[in-house]
Length: 448
Image (tube, rainbow, N blue to C red; front, side, top):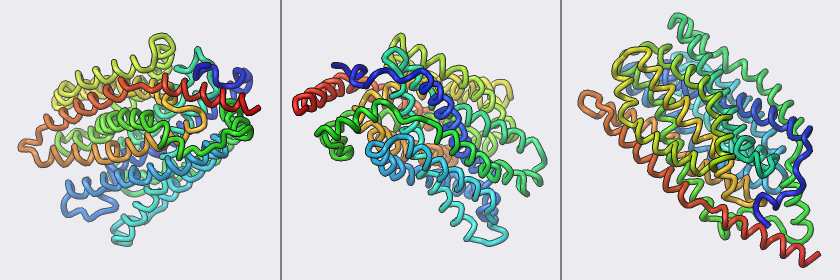
């Protein structure tokens, strides 16, 4: 009995059609909020929520609030992951969407530092923490849902659905930021930045309704029946005792991937505006173009995974990341708009989304059904919290401290991240998981 055969009968086609929109739309709306905050932290929040005496220091402080959200994400991944493995994936995805949507909407209603002083950044940090809790549970749970509704031949393309939602959300948020930064600074810093955050209240209602229409996965229902037959579900204990190697694989891949991804997407915006005097809307438009490309890259990469394997796609992505480490900044440093857009498209439109697409199937295969959501949530969020949150801050600090604001140290960070992704991928645990699934099935069959 293999991992793919361990599931119950293939999901009903009509049921699978309902899952796709629920995963993609829900992830898109949730990550629209997350990337919107990242962009505003890089471009706007430093001036609005911190003293303006030193613009560079204010930008660093603003980016630090972005990092704070990553500190909350492991708690969201662990707690909601356990809930997902015990009570169902659908429950988690509905609850986390409301948490993310409401906290994001409230950010748009916050007073600024000039109005209430230190209370403003404190409130911003509190809401950012709540955002982090919601985001920490989102991608792992959505990945498990998409993967478990697939059959053996479509694990790659179905597992890529959350990544498609992520990049649609990034496209929408970056397009929003591009439009907002194209107006005057008075409009942007006055009330323009608030518009997309407040609009999230309406988006949260829509997303919650979409998620509630989604069916539970057949693999979770089978696991629940197995637990009733005698193999009691203890996801955390099982995860730490029997599947710590899979957990280590997910942590390694995510640590490297998140560090690389957020330097490409977030640090590059601050670098261009702070050190190269490039208008904010140029970088934002580059991310928009890259996101549009990513919407094509993700499903293509998902289909390639079904032919050559998700591990292969991740390894190729790691190699491409290392190859881009220095050329990426050479293109940014030209100051030419087209060169900047090419750099962002190559990095965040092709290489990064291809790896994220492949992670859907690859990371899901590291765990059996009974620990999949908690494994994905714990591994992804613990592994990604420090790298994704601190990498842009560390990159900004390195460039600030380097004579002439050189970027070679950040390029070395890219190489290190790529190496970690490759090492994690090479220690794939799918064979061990297949063996464990077969052992549980045999034990339950013997008790029946």
